[in-house]
Image 1 (tube, one colour):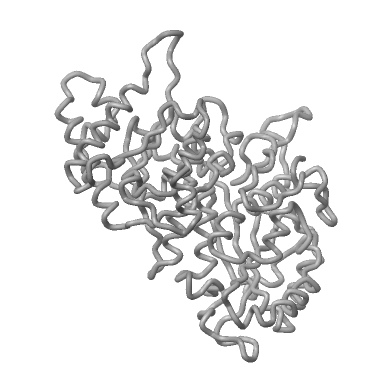
Image 2 (cartoon, rainbow, N blue to C red; image 1 turned 180 degrees about the vertical axis):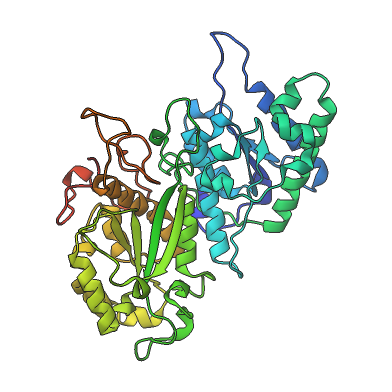
Length: 467
């Protein structure tokens, strides 16, 4: 409770109550009633890491060297404790195993921490987001079974020892004769945690509600029981409708723009990165592969008569409709029936030019995109009516993405399974064909007024909550 109230009031959290690292692992069920607790070996690893980190740093006595989710899931306040730890810890340490990537709870922990790192990178100089995830091999996982967020980590496990790579920490801790290799691997892991913590230095943020965030590993319903955790890669396209600094409306400041629409940075000067690249990171954190383009370059490629090949997000600058030709192309786009494309409108409350003309620009965009501005769930409509900060973008974009994915699954072309001669339920093929029916809509993030999906209208299409 102290962490949440202190962050909400804008204060800094004392270092003594910030966990140095967060150990994220998949709980292993007991084999049979009254059997030994298999997680006792993870607890031993946790204690060893804490001891090394206390020795390698100048953390004062009583500091939280680490945080580990033991039994708090069954008690009151576990969500708040997890959220506070993920919002303040310096380093996130996931214990890789096949069970880990099949765990929705582990995916939620990864998502919450990675969102924080993306936000940190967006407001710092440079175009590379902070990487404060230090993975550890509990049980080796084949690369083909890693979901996108884990696959993209640039991490060399070989420095922890050859036997560690082949057997993982679980093998070293359980097998006789490997005590020395275990000690070496744990010590090197602790050194890496300390190095990353001192290099990256993530700022604490306001905690997310752990129960309501999506999993960074994608929907659990897309995996077959006993199958690989990763599943087929999902793809999503991001299009940006904005000017470059070379074709701005008269009187518009060029400080928010770059050489192309993809370099538009609406949240300048707080944000240092263009919104397209921040959105790309946010989408990748939902286990998607992404492509990006400018609306001006892609104008005319939309064809509502063809089935969609991927869900899409259109990021729109309200100032973009000041250009008459672009406004006409956007209006034509709005008339085509493409509910798998959702609109996001970043809007900087501290941009004085935009605030001075907010009513005019908002009205013109609503006249240009009347269908898209009122389409879908409450989160989609809120995103289309203005996203006021980078933090809010990080909260609402996952809902908009998954709503677009739901509509894609409803409208994509389906094929009978190979060799099928009867009328069993068809399935999707390709990167979004995840072997199961469309999933229920994701839970909303706190802070957004979301309607019951049963009463939402799609202005030309059925509700996108279920098919």
